[in-house]
Amino acid sequence: MKPVIIVSTYPDKKTVTKTANELVKKRLAACVNISKISSIYSWKGKIENTSEFLVLFKTTQKNKNALKKAIKKMHPYDIPEIAEINISSINQPYLKWLIESTN
Image 1 (cartoon, helix red, strand yellow):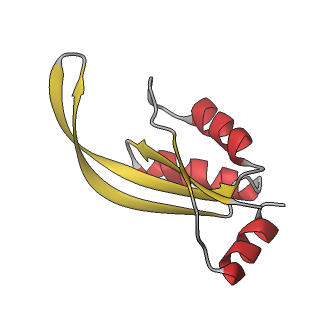
Image 2: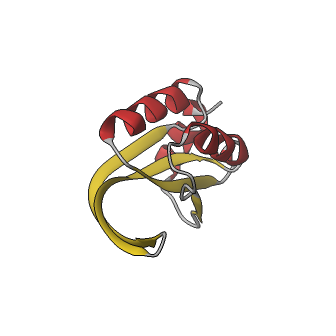
């Protein structure tokens, strides 16, 4: 089974923490990494400079579609980023843990 990382951004720590806890509890993600970042982007004709939280949801190929669907459903943004990173190489003990944590 192949590992996958789903990337998204969230506006605040409370929202992302609630989402991360629920998705790990449901075993759709084995681990969720959350980092505070600064984002500069165009939105509705204006340049925005905001603080956000960059989120890495670690899962498996088997669970990626259900995870993306759950993220979209729970996400507070009108147009959330939900990007997929396929992993071509990973250490086997971590992969084993990832699979066990999402089954």
